[in-house]
Length: 574
Image (cartoon, rainbow, N blue to C red; front, side, top):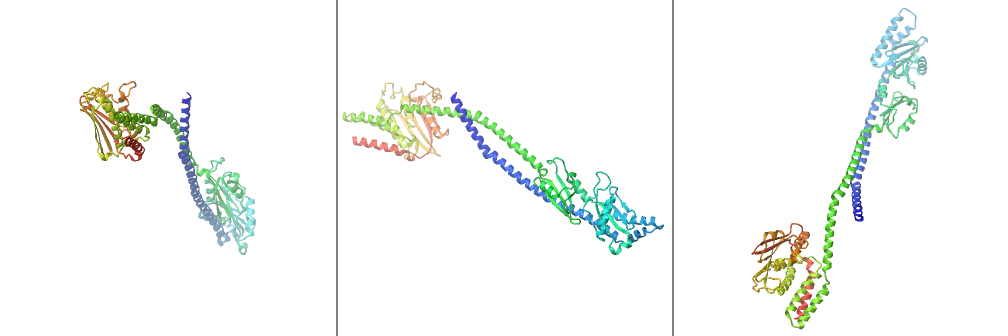
């Protein structure tokens, strides 16, 4: 249970690291890119809208200026019109033509109203202080007596010049009616007594100004309104706004209040010296972009959640069984290594013992024992002292010669061993001790029970007709080695189960021989290289081994040194 918990903790740590890497290398960079791109995109939109709105504001200001100039020209032309002046002068004198004169005056005023194409009204005050003459084409224009008196006073101070008040006239047409602009002009001083007009007042609805104020959207909720529009006088006081609560406030205070949340644009009305100002809400401009970004943020969050789910599934449903399989394989390898270590002997002790036996054989002049112990010592020393797993084919055949000599001493000269290997192949690398188990199987099992072969007692008939041939060839990067014998062969049933490694099988070395050779080759070089066996009862068996062509290189240095030392000892004995 503790091991299970520990393994789970390891898997959790690996999964957590994997998730952190995903967040660090994928999710966070994508999120930062989106945030930065959204910031740049919003700035670009604000810049474009600013330029568009600024151009539109300039057009509104130019249009309103044009309207004011047009009405100023009409007022100036009327005040300097001699016919109009004569009519108004004669109107002050009592007589039967009064009605006719009023009709002519109204005709002239109506003509100018038609020319202006504006909603306007004319107020004419006379020098005899009689009631003013009023003509208008829109009922919402209705100046009060106070407005008329104030405008008259302003015009009399600057005769012959167009004057403008610093306020707007709301009119008496009722709530919701547009405010009007007014201008006044008094006759020049040299003609004041010749016209009978004291002041000419023109009050009109500036269509461009009304459009500018009304077309802007506004809502009481600051997060929803699009823009605010203002008209301010020369002193910076708000005369007109789409939000009625803003009227009368100082334009600089409003600008400071809206500076953080809005882009602010201004345009001047040159004729009157007034200012148009627009404050466009930034959030309203970027609302759609923000919505898209919110969707992308939500998508990234969903991807992260799905990845977390995938991460858990991958590590605990897919990777966990794979890790378990790797762990089991590693455990088996450890068991094999422990088992191999258990049977490993100290090479110096074993070699010294064999050397002692050889020296005793020399003293007693028993050459058979001396030669056998020398061969066994060479084979044992090379096998136990070698650290590399690869040796040259020449070295492998040298060890095989020592092994065959020992087997011939054991079973008698009952078989012939032939090496059919080209000299150009001797420097190629092969796994060490890869041929010995195969030759051993041929000796112990291929010739067992045959005339001249091995027996349980280890005696042979001595005929020597049994043959083992080791041959090698190389082509297209593949080294092929064949171990062929003319022994008794195997039936199809036995051949089909020859690579089975069932526990308890009593087949001598064959239980680990073929299976270990094939497993070593596949582990070292992959499944492309392997061992195949062909056998025919009564004819013999051939083992075909395929290996990659490789150079033995420095793998031979340690083994050759030990082999030379042993050979030198032998020469000294002789």
